[in-house]
Image (cartoon, rainbow, N blue to C red; front, side, top):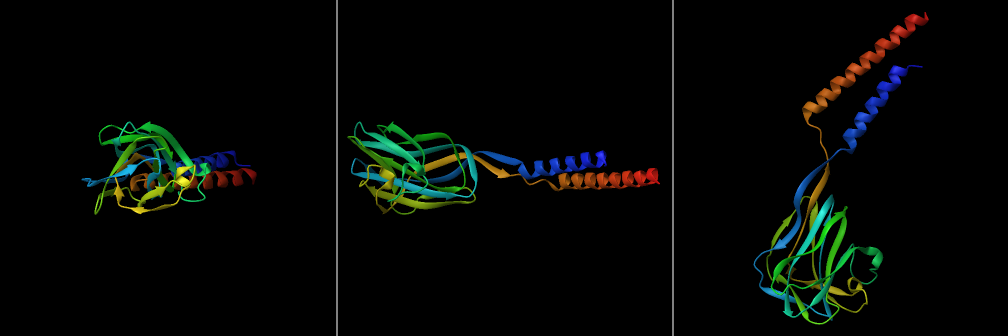
Length: 223
């Protein structure tokens, strides 16, 4: 009936959807970091696995995960798991990523995962040593330096006694802080600036006036 009106309404809908779906990315954001001056190195060997956990309420892209690892008796190989849970009942369906690696000879901030996309959830980084040698994971008994992005919470650090063929599914208990860092690009919903909202409101008011004028002209033509 009113092609112009339908076109205008479609345009308004498109504009509103653009505002609703727009995202803003903050590059190289520290999602969570537990670090400081270490005063112990926890052993990672075939009978013992270590893990840390955190929760996040935002989505991050291009996520890199590192941990301060070294070798006690080497060479030592390891496997890093990223899962959404740990403990009995955990399966490969809870796995986000997995990678095999060799523990560095000297204690260093060692990168385990790169380029991940992590949506709001709970995550656990588990480091196991299924072969020979003994790797280490640096930590601090006492207060470590904690840095988190908004909406991120540290869950703790854990010692896992390997009772399952899938290490993240074994029983665990709490331990002192272990050092690790998770970084990525934060993706958050865009909030339009006041000036932008004013221009949008003015435009919508103009569109409404044009629709009313067109409707009046149509009625006169019909009469």
